[in-house]
Length: 123
Image (cartoon, rainbow, N blue to C red; front, side, top):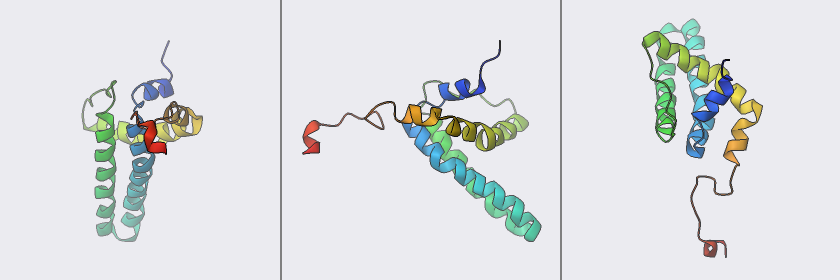
């Protein structure tokens, strides 16, 4: 029996900080990849603008992944890296987000980032 990809994804994306980073940086990655393609057809030289945007988005998500107890599987090579990055950004994360699992994890406790606040701060 194979595992549900969204359950596997959830097991590696349970840190609230990581989820918030993904919420911002997955769309940024998408913008970078769209820019790369669109600008290639307008002015090929300008298509390089999208690569640093995608690199920043991936770097920030990597910071979030380091906060997870269940780390992602290591990449087996360059093709695996490209395939997994694009599948996560364009397919898996949007499905995870739209499934409601994203918000269930994010809202699973009152302390958004697992920080304990002193009750006296509320006065």
